[in-house]
Length: 395
Figure 1 (cartoon, helix red, strand yellow):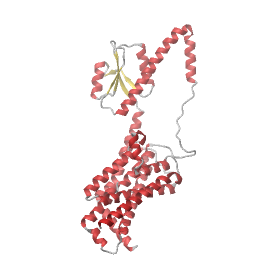
Figure 2 (cartoon, rainbow, N blue to C red; figure 1 turned 45 degrees about the vertical axis):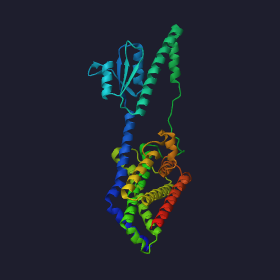
Figure 3 (spheres, one colour; figure 1 turned 135 degrees about the vertical axis):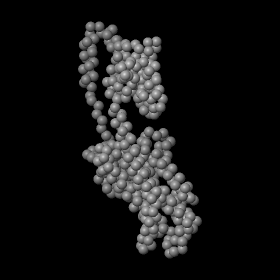
């Protein structure tokens, strides 16, 4: 016990003297969760704002007026016919959209029966496709309604007002559409940006211990302190156990820090919903403990197999970012191509995130998170085995 205590003191001294490492461990994940969460929240708010659409219509027909009313009634777009008291023309619309002042425009000319959609070429692909599909649908709907009105007028004659009233009554009697979440009955947890982001950044923060952990291993190897320690009555497992305990405490602090940001910082300073942890405390502890050990195992593995600090820092940081991206830290998994999603099933970061999502959103329990918790423990065991075997072979 005395040996372990002395080794723990050594590890904490090394950690506290590494100021850049401490910044990476605690400051960077907090900054990232702020940037990503606030950007996503702003994107949600922007979606509720009406997107301006330049309207250049040379025909001024009844059909185009119906299209205008239909687009504005959607609640997603705002038709702009005048700029500085001047009518929008096809040429001015092209110029303004080309400069990036507006993102979308509709052009209808007298010499062409088609309707032109003008789009800012710098728009992100998913936003462009979603917006143009919505505009196309609204235009087609107005054209179809105009064609049906003309058909009813021809066939019905004097009965048209009666048919119109019947159609209006039928539309008003349609049952409402309600949105509900597929949550367990009596669940108090409600999905939100915070509820979805915190689990990902807990794992992201934990796995970034690879940089200081791998760095300490390489420093001890290259400066000869590891060889000097091995001349003392200290076993290799005691050395690695001290590192595991030290960085396990670091991971638990990171977990508490991320939870604190979600529970208090976002609600108090940004008015966002508070993070809800639920009541499955044993399952939360199991997942956090297993995820922490997996992150430590990853750090030990990188430190053992790397030769220099630059090598470990570069490979470790890049791999953590890649694992974070494919595991759902920054982007939803379902938006990724099938090959990436299949690869993500092999990521320990995803195992931890899925466990937290099961607990913090789906209101799961110990049984729910058990399979991936076992995988996290197995990953740690595999990493420790490789690390001990490599050290034993080299030293």
